[in-house]
Every structure is written in C-alpha cells, then in structure tokens.
Length: 338
Image (cartoon, rainbow, N blue to C red; front, side, top):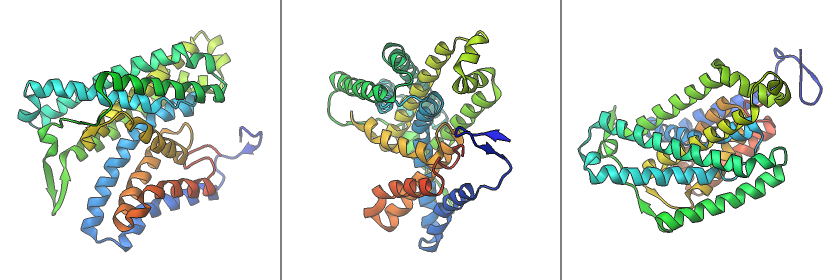
C-alpha cells in the first residue's frame, strides 16, 4: 500500500478506470481518423504528426524537468527556446558561408546539425544557470513570484534578441541534404522528418536513462520528494537543482533549433507561441512524467495534423479540447500520479 499526497492509502495494483479511459482516448486520437482519411494520406499525415510531436516533446521535456520535478513555474522557458533558435541560426550562417551546407551529404549534414545542437545546449544551459542563480533561487516555493519574475525575464530576453538580431523574421539556411525526400510506397517523407523523429526518441531515451538508471537521477528524484534528507546525506541539493534547471533550459534551446530548421524561419516571438504548446503537452502528460510528456506531445502533433486536414478551422482549438477531455477523464494527466 502507498500513501498519496492526500493522505489516502493507494494500492498500486488496483484497477484505475480513469487511467484506462485516458489511454482509450489517446489510442482513439491515433486510430479514428482512418474512418475519414484514405490510407496513403493518413500515413503522410501520421508521419507529419509524429515529427511535430517529437519536436514539441523536445521543448516540453525541459519544461517537464523544471516544472514537474522542481515545482518551478518558469514562463521564461519560451525565451530559452528562442535563444537556442537564434544561436543555431547564427552558426548555420557561418557554415553556409563556408559552403558546407550545400555540398554536404546526409551524414555530413547530421554532423553539422549535431554541432548546432551542442551549441544550442551550451547557450541554453548557460542562460538557464544564470537565471536560476540570479532570480529563480530567491523564489523557490512561491509560485506567484516565479510567474511574475520569469515573465519579466522572458520579456528582457526577447528584447535582447531584437537588439542583436533585429525584430524581423529571418529565413533559416537549412542543409540541402535535409530537403530531399525518401519514397516509401508512394509516400514522400522529407529526410529532416526522419532525423527529427530520431533526435526526439534519443532525447527521450537519454532523459529516462539519466533519471532512472544513474545516481544523479536518483538524487534528483529523492530531492524532489524530500530536500532535507538529501541535504543531510551530504549532497548539495541547491547545486543539483541549479544543474537541473540549466538542463531544462538547454533542452528548450535544442527544441528551438529543431523547430527552426523544420519551419525554415525564425522570429523573436516564436518562443512564446511554443511555450503554450509545451504547457498543453505537460498538462496532458502529467506533471513530472517524461513518458507522459512524450505521449502527450505525440497526441498533440497527430491531432493537429489530422484535424488541419479534415476541418482546418478547428486545428488551433483541437489541442485545448484534448487537454480538457484528458483532464476530465484523468485530472492529473495521462501518466500523473493519482
């Protein structure tokens, strides 16, 4: 028997009708469109939805780490996303001037992308560490202060972007190899979609391995449950939480690079728009659940593409509707603790 946060005894083997309902709804999002869409179009939309889903997960994973594990409401998460995108934009411009983007094959382009992602991770991590030490550290346990101070930080960071890179949209130079397509049974799949899905899955596996299989992951999870005990055992929980916040910011910056390459352009307000989607994904998946965020991101990506094809005017509102239905069926999200 387990004791929930509400003081009730819980049996981990007990049947959970709400959780079953959430899973049935999730599977329905994937399967039901086959009734109205022909198989070839369905396959194309599904691949596009999976790509969008894993890109959303890259952003939402950082928010899951910061919000779900550390209980910090970080509305500057979108600013880290934008800074990562602009850092990637600058580095890709350097590669383009050297002619490396046009002449590279797929393997070389993936190597270039890996360098850009590493740069974005470094930029996001440094900015996250600075933000945590300067302002976030003083607001632990106070959600109202966190909302106000991170909202202000996001505004400042966005204005700095406009100072350095300008307020206008910028076209992103995408490696030529990523613009080619594979043909699978008359279904054209852009190569970057395959790369994006691969990166998203690897990031998910990496986060899970760190949290579940490493000493650091165990300390982080223990610190979330009881900071004092971890501190008594000789670990500097404050330093660990600073690292966790920096890691979440770095993941947001990585998501910014991948989204910008996918869309082919960047603009200063892109982080705020993607923050909304990331919040929806985290709420659907359940606070603190990386797997829940992964599944929630896939649901959002698939639903958006299916509905955009069937009823375009409802595409923007379908994700809010999914979130509302999931919360009615399963108030703590798909993988949240009951």
